[in-house]
Image 1: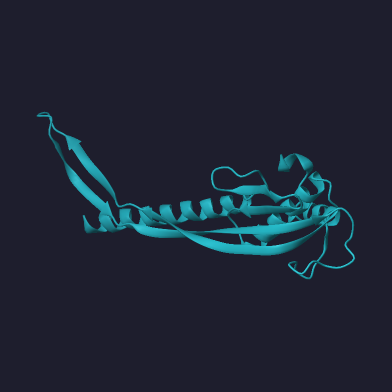
Image 2 (image 1 turned 180 degrees about the horizontal axis):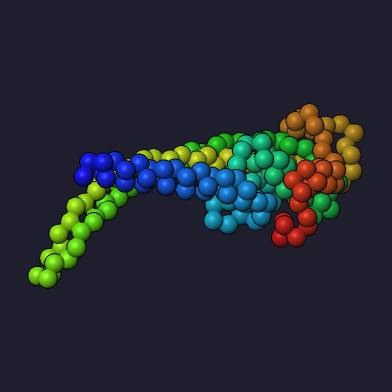
Length: 180
């Protein structure tokens, strides 16, 4: 009975580990550039006439989150008739989420003629699993033409919105249909 218990316990843990690694690899492939829904995707909103917030929250890594926020900033600038933008403020964070795997009980046995169950119960322990959810939000100031002097509240980089959009779409192999 002890060997059977150890065998079942080992099998259950390996099944769980393999299932979890599969989920991790598949979710890594599933990181998409899409509108915000179910806790993931890009978003934007207007703050004032030439200032917007653009961000991205998702699974994956912080670099991709920053690139997708920058891509959204470029798209927002272009959609509102601006050719250039600067980042006034960038906020990046990475939240850690815990998924608790509950203990499971497996029973083996038979139901006798009297209607009572006779068998053995095996209890498997629980494990906690972690995944990270990076997010980035950029506050941008937009310009119709290249400014002669950089604003004092801007970072040192003046972005050409069309170049940023085209280069990041190429880098991540995105087509126009994937952002709507």
